Image (cartoon, rainbow, N blue to C red):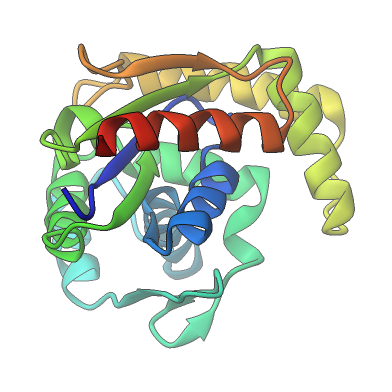
Length: 220
């Protein structure tokens, strides 16, 4: 087996994208940030004042939406670099809202599956191992305590110059956890064959190395 697909699922702010980027870089794979795609749709709904609960309006919006993920981590929405705009905590809630809509998930899942039709991809999100890449050779369910995730997001936002206080981030993560696990369409669940990885007390390097060891075992 020369190349495999790797699915990393887990709750909001668990560090999935950071780890997925590291793994992809180490292996020479392509990282597909599915969360960024939902953030783009949520962001566009807000910017254009589109009601995400109106399926007809959402179908029109999706049909006229282009999302490009570049190798250097940039996110382009309809030709505009929105890499920073979609990373706010507010944008995360918008993403959680639109992700409850079946028309949105159907459209984006089809895009994601097409992107990863060839092996050699690392994809992270909420339903990668259960819906998008059910045949992924390695599945990880990456989680951490709410406290650990809120602290990480707070420090991350500070570094980016985003001013959101810890208490607000903590409450939003709790709310998003509830929304993600209780939505009717593709709720956040651990795939039966996914390896549970609690990163509350692990560094980025430790998590990366652990997953690389799992990849090596799988490749054998």
